[in-house]
Image 1 (cartoon, rainbow, N blue to C red):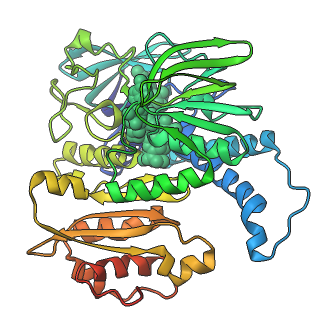
Image 2: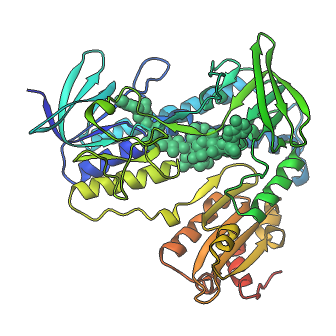
Image 3: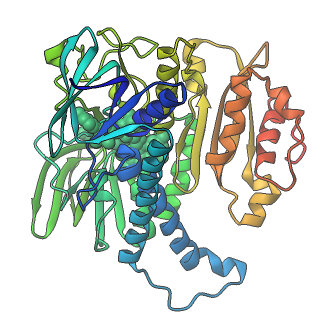
Length: 475
Ligand code: FAD
Ligand code: NAI
């Protein structure tokens, strides 16, 4: 008889491993299957996020920011740096170490929570009285059975039609994180989140970076005022972003990559670079899951169809994270994982999609939660806005980075906060206050009346809330 589990999780990324831990905490007998291997063939839990996403990108963003500060900004503080040089191999090695610490951390958490881990590919077999059979294709194939199945198989990078990734010249997020020799010229297609973060890393390290974006507007999903401010800063840094282009033929050879494109004015252009990163979005991953054979319904994008509770078309089969609808973010995947484990236990797991924060870890950082001004206008909602620039914040001046602002949007009648948008230093941390406020349905006045430490960047949040009623104190 095959091994029996209460819950089998397929996929050990942030959606899957967190679901497994929460299910184990709730007293279930849990298995998690994940196929990711490191370069030595060993398990590397944590999925895209840990291996080729959130964690390594932030490690390189940090290292490259230190390098840029040492080269360009330390002098402002009276610190002279002579003989500054880049050891790219060491920087990449450090990034790999950070990844490995996270991989091992998750393995430790599995042991601590008595979760049985299978290293291999999981696929659906037959459904019977005991639940679903899941085949694990590992060194030795085996079949296990689970009453509840949570699918958390994540997503893969989308390639341009006719231009597959070779990870040598044409890079996905994977290759983009391990370029071994600094290219003189680097091209990116897509100025979304990956385009801006990875473009920033390689520009800071010294590459001449050009990003080709298909849409005519920069960061269309971001509040317009914030996106404009960010674009100004990126232009100043020399990050070249061409909007409204149409990418044509791409040729890759020994010398690099040439990209033919039409610019926004209709002119024919050719970009020649050593490496090209394609960051045009991601596609849900159900490869090898045998989903169709068991009748697991997918939508036209290839995402597993789920209801608001993450229930799929099959009884007792759930799906979370990048493989289902909604933003492709690690913390969204985690929240869904926790909620599903709690629902299996008969509890009322809940995910509030209105308060999922977004952060782009560039410099300046961009962060937001809730609705943008353009969304409120389109919905015909009456609102009040308040902004406060970091230029007028003492801590930002002391840091030496006064780029950007905090912006509040609140209901015109009730003053309930509808959206908070930030661009500037360390706003990835500041946004949490806005998330908490919105979860508690706070008004802008609530934030304006709270004592914030001085001097701190968070005072810009308080001041932006005060600005909603035109009563900033420091501007
Ligand atoms: P994944 O992390 O993709 O994990 C899925 C796992 O399932 C993988 O390990 C895969 O190998 C395994 N798997 C798939 N099929 C099977 C199978 N049949 N059997 C066994 N195992 C299987 N999000 C943020 O919130 N913040 C960030 O800063 C951020 N930065 C990012 C940077 C980059 C460059 C990229 C590419 C993404 C970034 N993301 C970020 C997005 C984030 O990585 C994803 O939203 C998140 O990883 C989704 O988690 P998941 O568990 O749904 O899937
Ligand atoms: P994205 O959706 O953020 O951006 C893709 C960009 O490519 C868009 O601006 C789109 O208009 C453009 N594009 C699409 N097709 C094109 C074409 N043929 N020619 C030119 N431009 C084209 O996707 P990205 O950057 O690949 O990232 C994928 C996802 O990963 C993000 O949406 C996000 O969910 C997640 N992520 C999150 C991060 C974070 O939270 N900090 C960091 C990196 C990724």
